[in-house]
Structure formats: structure tokens, C-alpha cells
Length: 224
Image (cartoon, one colour):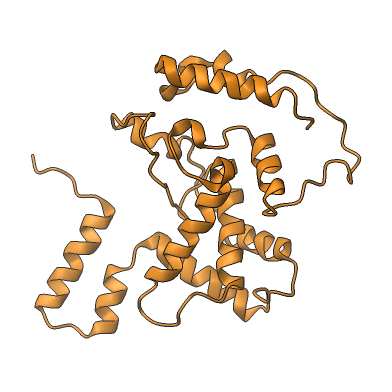
């Protein structure tokens, strides 16, 4: 049986065939564009057309608009753990997963903010090559997803959303509105990950399990 090709392989092969046929450059660029990157182009263009990409405007409004544009996108849990299911090592530097064609709850939040920031930075060149803007999108995701904005192993990721908020707030990426909205402080211990070890492939590694446990105990002291 012939091995199945990935989506990127199919796009790449189609582009090679197009080049062999002597197709014009704009058409070749379209054939090489990844569907996720296509969404970035479409959504940032829409934000600009609707006047939501100005730096002076509230970023939240733009992010909400991206969420509206994403309506109907499939929910897919565990996309950030796909490399582990493919025998990746949680002690190695985690690959940066970038998707706009399917989300879980936190990746949707990250993506909406990242697309809004890419649009407001006006870094999307209006050419067939959208590579630089996709790189900027990745940079925005990376600095939100990892503690201190530094991507390392599995344990460097901000797994608990409460820490995602506090870490981002400390670096000026988001604003914690808990007190302003008169939220009630939750002092329950965070033990979900270590308490459901079998649900997290990375935690089968004893060292990783211990690091996550220390992270949970550290977060017990942080109000949320």
C-alpha cells in the first residue's frame, strides 16, 4: 500500500507539477499556500477592511472578531500533544504547533489574539508570499503559550489557564480582570494534571511528572 501523504506534501507536489507545466507565479503561490496560512491572510485582511487593525483601537475587539470569523471551525482536543503520540520526547524542546483550521479551547484564545496582533502590526505583505506573516503569527503564539515566552520542553508550556493569565499579565500581554469584575478567589489546590496522570502522555515520564507536580504546588500560592 502506498503511504498516505500529508496535507503539506500534497500541496508541495501540486506546486511542483504546476511549475513543470509553466504556470504563472501567482497561481503557483496559491497552489503552495497552506489552508491555515490562507485563513491568516483572509482574517487579517478582514480586520483591516473593517477598521479593526488600527493600533489605537482595542485589541480585544479585534480578537473577538477573529473568534466570530472562526465560528464553525472543528474542535479537536490534544493537538499540542500530537508529537508525543508520534513517539516524541517530552524532555526535548516542544515543537511549535500552529493551527487555524481546528482548535481546542485555549488554542482558540491564543489564535484569536495572535491574529489580531499580526493584523495590528501591519506586517502582512500584500503579496503572494505570506511567509513572513505566518512567522510573526508563530512568534505571537510562542510568547503566549510558554512560561516567560521561552519555549522549552513540555513543562515550559503554561498548562493551567490561571497561570497562562498571570504569566501573560506579568509580561503585559493580557490584563487580569478578576478583581475588577469582582471575581471570587479560588484557593483550591491545583492537582488536575498529576491527579489524572494517565490522561497526559507526557506524565508517563517520571521526571516530567515530578516537574509538573512542583509547578502545581507553586501555583497553590498564587491567588486566582
